[in-house]
Length: 508
Image (cartoon, rainbow, N blue to C red):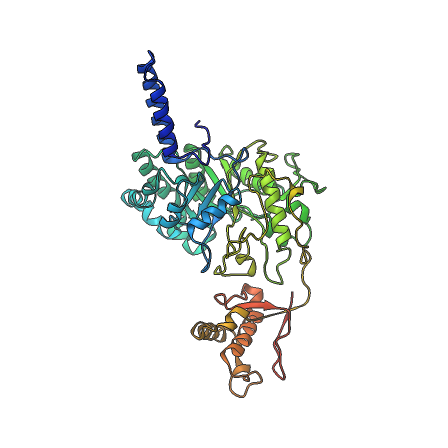
């Protein structure tokens, strides 16, 4: 295999080196043979440059980072590339094939993963010509300067039941057409894959014991078996999104925090009764569960890559353990661990690509507060906490972290109100639309802010929005409603009731 290039080595550098070698050999009697050898090596290097060098951790190459852009105020792509390198990232994964981002990553030395959007998978599956056009437009213009290593077809497609009929069984045909296009264009080292969540398993993210894990029956034969056959045949990876945070947060205390944070000194252990293998961290359990499910379909040899993992640095009041301290500890431990290439108990020594989620806190992501708090950096480009993704910095060498203040569930009342930033610069149209939506749901959601109601005064859009947001959230929280409203709402533990106007509350 081709050795991993230095991050500072570029096609221009190698061209200069080649010219110097030719000059030094000009007078040699072995010149014809040496020139022939040099030409062969140059062709090999060109192919490696066109497709990216093998993925490696350790030895100076750090973890990968997911570079999402669901935000309105993050740094430009060129500055983002600088921040990736400052954190020690060895690779980067984006959720599309954005031209500005791909140009900014050119010459950085980082291996790049790009993604085909879910919505065009059926078109690429139905037409080789469409797949070839996609490759020509979204990949070829950036090679070799941008070292694209992986082309991922869709993101968590099998988690979206609304596209089951249209897309699930089209994933592999789309991959086959894209692979055919890459081969026709002699791009030989870009690997194809697709990212899947842990919910592809019957028992979801926490299958115990790992050796008993299996894929869901609705996708095992129709999607997973052909996918694994394709991945095995192309020597690619099964990309999984594996978040120990969600397992720990939903475990009601049955999973120790240190076990989920990959703490090397934890005393927590789990022994799989089916294999006798001992586990010292939750991530290894999750990965070996995926491996066991693949083995049950006859493809246990397919390699595993971690497409997303991480820990939120903040969240809502009712989201336990989401804080800067835990996020820093998890990602530092992850980097140090992967630098040693330990594999897992069932796959000792296995190398795997790993991508931390994410580069930035993305303020426009919908859902609960944690969705907007996974970043290594704030939107202004300052680090949320220091981390060396190469894993070379000793854990004791980092500065002290802030104390964790929410590692146990919050038990007090919580309300949902207009966010402070939205109130300072009120977008009346956006607030009006959100107010209309909230009042249109449920039974009597906004009766108190109608004329004559106990919360009609003060008669302002901001005051009415706070009441409506809270009333809606309290009614539908148990069925998945979030305190978000297009980034206009936030949780509070300060009672917003005033006078005779009472805001209902629920306990955390």
